[in-house]
Length: 186
Image (cartoon, rainbow, N blue to C red):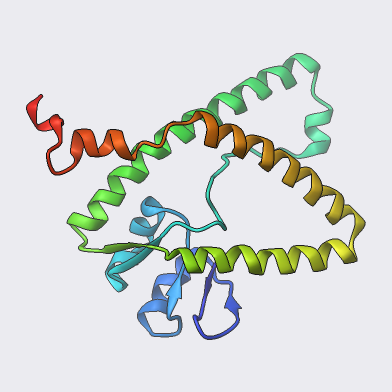
């Protein structure tokens, strides 16, 4: 997905985004992560990358099947597939952390891309615009409203748990890798 900063969004296949950026047809673009960006050649046409947003703060890895053919399988085979898909998804998630973090460093050092955090004012505006769209869609579609309510209930519970129980890693990162980081002593 990519879009002109001053105009309506333009959806392009991933392989066409870099060329459109290079020719000036797009002012900015978004694809997915540091690894995908490097493979597609984003660092060749842009040396600026904005970090963090609400539109894609997590990824899911999935394997899709033809429902009719899957439903026709014996239960034992379905159970094998279910376990294999879950294992493959987790394996992909773990490998992604390793790959994305390596490519993030390479984009900064080798490719000389500058990364900037998205300002809080923009993040806040994203939430406000989303709220406007969600309220409109919920008023138009009872199923959308039901799904939204379910997602909000889950998000409230899960995010409260996360905020209360998961330690922010900034202090540990600074302790080991900051200006006077102790990792140098090991």
